[in-house]
Image (cartoon, rainbow, N blue to C red; front, side, top):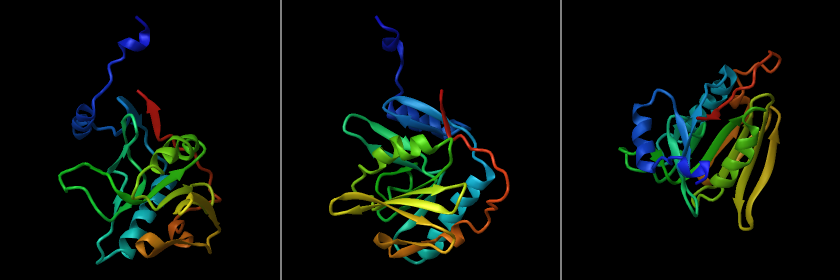
Length: 201
């Protein structure tokens, strides 16, 4: 018997129940859980600005934003995954008793050198399988720059928006995102430390 056969995988039900009790957030991939470390102030500032911008743009309309306390469930061909994106917009929300969403239209991750690999790799590949998803935003924390993967007839196409004067259209929700508003409280001249969002437990 190999060492791998001794690993006790966590069921979805156990994971969801555990998150309700845990003081630390965890992400989940096919039975494995990953603890999330704290983020830097600049990371949180950008994430809050994104959710605030979406909230203001969508007031009085059916679609609504959620912050990083709400999980998204990704149904992969062989397993389920649960991630905590930094922000999302949902137009067909799950029941209010759920702790996750299944049908985000917009997903956003604030990235740094510490999180780039997973945000541009594993999470991107998983997020782009969500049928309702229209756009995935990779928001830089070290400069005013966003790479957005927009859904098109031929699949998801990346497009870059750079500079404080840039405005990113989000046609699926009839809204837009101003980089000047998103980065309003960020001082790019100040030294910063990379944030580490997750580590294996």
